[in-house]
Length: 112
Image 1 (cartoon, rainbow, N blue to C red):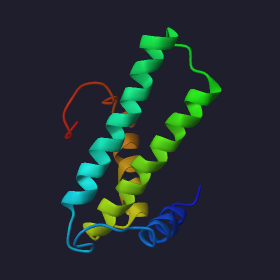
Image 2: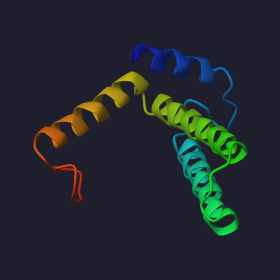
Image 3: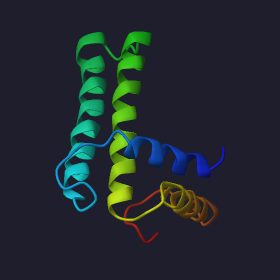
């Protein structure tokens, strides 16, 4: 995987962004991110409620669409904050790798 692909994705999605005060509005993509993440959780909840936890291909594809929306809002929020998505992703990988090496994946808090 090339992390620069995230930057290409970020630029491509920006072409589809339409919301108030674009370029000066990080609140809008935050609310969108929270909403779409909630939709992912709702779909998974209903798999357990209605389908006894059995994941069908149709449900998997519905979740994939919602995950795409989550990713779109992540890209918009990163753009609004002046962050390159590749840097956000790399920093996350570095953080998790460090935690794994130090045996700190379990627990809570950002500074493990």
